[in-house]
Length: 265
Image (cartoon, rainbow, N blue to C red; front, side):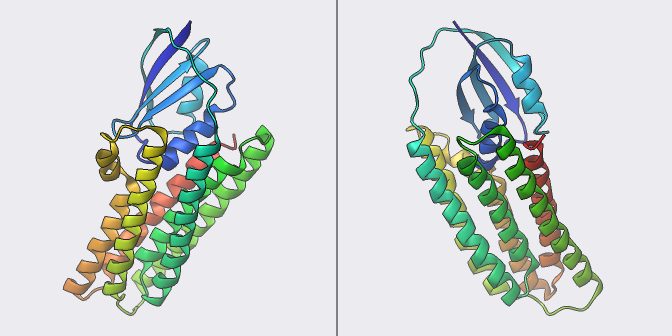
C-alpha cells in the first residue's frame, strides 16, 4: 500500500523549480513517484512511510509549501527510464545557455541592463538544469558542492549587476537601444516558451496545462517586462524603465540563487 500526499507550493512558478524540488527529494528512498502540476502549483507524491520528512525538505526550499492531503493509495509503479528526461534537460540547458550568451552580449552593445539581467535569469535556469543533469548518479556531497558553487556564483553576478544599475541611476548614461531590447526579448520569449512546452510534453502526453504553464512562468513574465521597458524607453526617451526592470530581475536572480543554496544544506 502506497501513500499519496498532495502539496500546494505557491511559489513553484516554472520547470526550473520543479528540478530543484526533484533534486531536494532525491535523498529520500521512500518516494515512489512525483507528479507536478505547475499551473496549479500542486505536487503529488507517492511514497511509503510518514509524510513529515517530505514536508520538511520541501519547506527548506522556501517555496511556501503546504500539505493539502495525505491518504492511502493502491498503485503500482514501473521503473522509469531517465534517458528521455536527460535528453530534454540537455535541450533546455543548451537553449538557456545560448540565450544567456546572446542576451548578455546584445545587452552590453545596446546599453540595456534589462537584457543583461534577463541573460542572468536564463543562466540561472541553465544552472538548475545543469545541476539536475550532472548531479544524477553522484554522491550527496558532490551534489551539495555543485549547488553551493552555482548558488554563490549566481549571487555574485546578481550583486554586480545590481551595483551597476545603481551606478547608472546616479550617473548620466546613454539611452538604451529600445529596438534591440524588444527584438532580443521577443526571441528569448519564444525560447522560454519552447523550453516550457518541451518539458511539459516530455513528462505528460496531455496538453491541457501547457498554455497556463506558459502564462504563469516567471521567465515569460520577465521577457514581457523587458519588452515593455523597451517600449517605455522609446516613449519616455529615458533609460529609467530599463534600469527599473533590470533591478527587479537581478532581485529575482538572487532569489533563485538562494533557492539553489538550499540544496547545499
